[in-house]
Every structure is written in structure tokens, then in C-alpha cells.
Length: 440
Ligand SMILES: Nc1ncnc2c1ncn2[C@@H]1O[C@H](COP(=O)(O)OP(=O)(O)O)[C@@H](O)[C@H]1O
Ligand SMILES: [Mg+2]
Image (cartoon, rainbow, N blue to C red; front, side):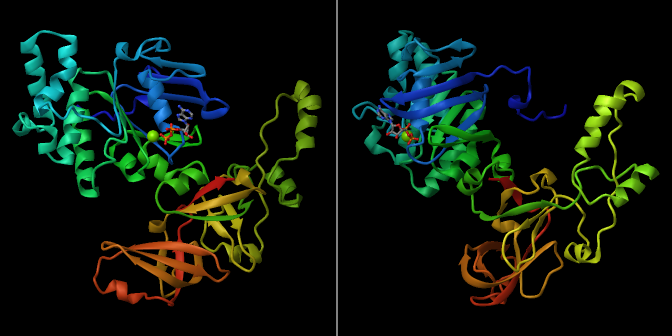
């Protein structure tokens, strides 16, 4: 059987497990969450990502039942959870500072919540053992929290949170206390446990790499609002705003004015007489609005609806050809600096014509070389700084007009990084589809 991709958010018949509907939360006259609408699906590993103070913990506290929205509604499995007390929700929350009971063993810490709800000792023991196994803590069952490492304590807290088999586990910066190496290992462990238990996880983090590693989808937040919700790949490859592009990973943003590289009318299937007329028209991106209006009002009742005219443009003159050699006539040009060639984005929407846009370029999509490459976008510059990252090097290149751009190259050969050094005159280049054009 073909493996199906896990993407319930793309399936209109799927019902979300969690729904924020126009949720606003105010503290006095301060708006912490601002008209937020968001769906989270069962079995998702969902990450809330954003700078400190953007409202992540407030969202989690509302989900857990420690706060109520000022307006709007939160639904869990189709039911409004307002008024359902925290201990009656099928939700468990693990906080940034997970406090284990210091005088209880690992085993008793995990059993604690179960004992409060049931007196079936055999069932409790079986469940605790299962949790110990899941979090690979069997060997430490009898130890006290101070007799195990930070990473192990974190796993005890996780085991304790999962013991009651919550539908939803909320993790608020759960790995904040761990060092980088342990953090990474624990991220993979979390993913593994999440997959094995099928529990829906919502994790809060301010660490973009962590969110990108663990999550099925990421919500990027800013000042109480969700800026974008998408898969990690979409967030990275197709950010919808300069904020998101800049927040996730490294990016160079170049602002400029867009102009359509072609008419917005399809060039194929031209009727000869239309073409003949069009050849005498000024090169215009839009069909003649007055003509269409006249047709619709006056002619349509008689001769029927208008067939969308397909205009053929006159051939570009020599100067236009020179600026776009070998490049398909599609997308937009971005005029960004006096005396510099326009930047070409062939997959951008020509309807951006006339608007100010930002071109977002990931460093790994920008090549750097000492000889002039054959590419759609080629600019001259000087190397100002090189960050050697082992497998990669990032070059900070100052362009002729003073703008900075980052280019990244894999260090496949050990000598290759000696090719380009500080102060070198270089070319940076990228393809017509490497950048993401953002309307600002
Ligand atoms: N109980 C409260 N009273 C007043 N302001 C609060 C309260 N809780 C949170 N805030 C404010 O709401 C904003 C969002 O807080 P929080 O959700 O904790 O942010 P995050 O977890 O993203 O860092 C912050 O400016 C914070 O100061
Ligand atoms: Mg917080």
C-alpha cells in the first residue's frame, strides 16, 4: 500500500482537534492575543514559534484552562472549552520549569497523577512501567530527581505528563533547560514518543531550528498574531511576509520596484486580425477597459459574450532583448538600485507591476564566483566577511552600491575555500526562481 502523507490540514473532511476562533485575550488594556484563528489537527506535532512576549504561553494557558479568552472561542474536539475546568480537560501541560517532587523517586513521580485518579494498583504499575520504557528510564526508576541528569529529569517530566494518556500535550519551552547537544537528542526523542503514542503535541519554542525539526506545522507569531501557519518546508521556502522570511533562517531582503516582464495576457492562440490590431497598440499590460465595457453593455446582447481577446505584443526592441538575454519573458523585473541591472524573478506575479516589493534570497541559493557566471541574476561585489561553518561557508558580499548580500557555498573540497578570500572582487548570482518576492 502506498504510504499516505500526513497532512490533515489539506483534507477538507478532517475536523480539527483544536480550534481557536477569533480569540482575543486582553490583560487590562494590553492585547496579548489579537483576534487569532487557528486549527490544529489530531496527531499533529504543532509548534508555536515567536519572539519572547508574542503570546505563546498565553495561548497555551488558555488551552490548558488557566485563562479564558476575553472574546472568541476555543474548541477541543468540537466543544467550546470555556468554563470546562482545567482538570476536566483532556489536556496536559508540561511547563518550561517542570517541577518534579524532589523527595519522590522517578517511579513515584510518574505514578503521582495516576494515584490521584485511581486506586487500581496493578493498572497504575503497568502504566508507569510502560512510561518508563517509552522514555527509556527503566534503569532510573528508583532514583530521586537529584540523582539523574537534566535530560533524564526532562524525560521524567514527559513520562509524568503522558501517563494519563492526554489527548493533547502542551509543552511550553520543554527543552529550554538543556544544553545544545542534549536538546537536539531530546528533540528526536520527543518526535519518536509523539509518533508512538499518537498524542497531539503543541510545543512552544522561540528556537526556530527546534520548531523546524520537530513540527508537522509551525505557526509563526508576532505580537499576539499568527503571521503564517505552514509546514516547516513551506515556511522556509515560501514565506509570505518579510517578517517570516527574516525570522526563519538567514535571508537577504532587497527592496525595489516591480515591473511586469510580459503582458498579463496569455501569448498563445492568437487570431490574426486581433494580432494585427494589437501590433499597433501601445504595449499595455491590460486589455482596453473601455472596449470591454462597450462590448459587455452594447454588443453582448446582440452577438453574445465577449471572447477574452488574446493580444500579441510587438516584438521587444533591441534594448529590451539585451537586458533579458536567454531569460523567459515572465515574472517581474525589480529595479532596486541606481545604475544596477534589475533583478529578475521569473516566477513572480506580473500583477505586482508598479508595486514596491522585497526579494527574499536564502544564502544557499546565491552562488559566488571569481569569474562571471552565466546566470539570470549576476551582480558584482567584494567579499567583506567569511563565516566558516565547517561544511559550509557564508560570504558577506558588498555590492557596488553598498548593499550587502549573503552567499553560501558547501565546502566540498578542502582547498575550495581558499579560492575566495576577504577583499576579493567576486560575482554573486542566482536563478530567476531562487528568490521569493514579497509584496510589502
Ligand atoms: N497575567 C498577565 N497580566 C498582564 N500581562 C500579561 C499576563 N500574562 C502575560 N502578559 C503579557 O502578555 C504578553 C504575552 O506574554 P506570553 O504569552 O507569556 O509571551 P511568550 O510566552 O510568547 O513569551 C507579554 O507582553 C506579557 O507581559
Ligand atoms: Mg512563554
